[in-house]
Length: 393
Image (cartoon, rainbow, N blue to C red; front, side, top):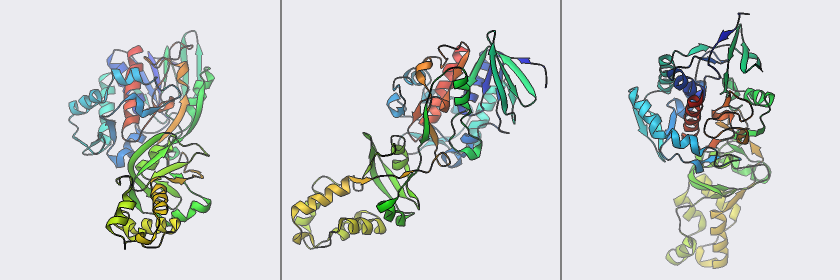
């Protein structure tokens, strides 16, 4: 093994947060080494947004993040905004477009974002070592010593930027939590987030709707999202379900409003206007046929509206607006876009991402207990937290 190389900072992880931190710190004159066990940088960036990278969201705000400390993300997000990152994208000549709900994507490829971050690192003369799994991390005399592959590196600053265990096929692991615990930092129990939910038991009937999607409002634990839901062969997915999955815990119900566009009382109004109509035909005009059929079958209302008491119609309307599912689980880290939980924020500075009790240790990005909504929010946290740490190195 080589004799130690000396740096101002060692960044563990060449994902979004790690690359951002390294590039900014390097351009501030710091000598930075990035170590990653993968053979290339930004693997999660490359697959994001269908390969076009939903790189930020114009609606970024702290209330769109989950954390044991909901105020922790405020400082970093305020100091490095979505518009700051967009200015960087434009400075590199990357064409972009806005989809729905403030989501920004590359017109071309997610590879443009990785190339941009690597170019920023090159400006700061950042060194890289890929394909180098870390075998040990030690701390003594104010310096961190990292052994990875055939190298040993030392620096007074160490940045944990290895993310969480979501999407293990890309090499994701819980390594960040091992390092955190080694240095006495607490870890909020990690769990899959932005993940499809599974259905079992009596609700397995809905799995027969695999491939059917509809605009709904999904709710869980006080959070609600009005987007598409998709039924799968295992349960439910689609943006609305992925969003509420971050709030779901085993035993909690997920409520779905299948007709969020309808005003309260719509079914009684339909009885006055179309007395000969049946629930099945009304739902068939508003929802995909197979879904309308399944809901009608579950409600068990087959008579003409004129022959159905108002009380029963009101009950049917309420059920359609507040259909309760009891997920049996989720599809786990393999299908989770991100990891919720992680390195506890109460041991970190919200301004610098530095560990309060271990001088020179930082944690950024997905490794930290800050999880954004679907739609570019997690990338914006990666950029903002990486930038914040870089200011303090």
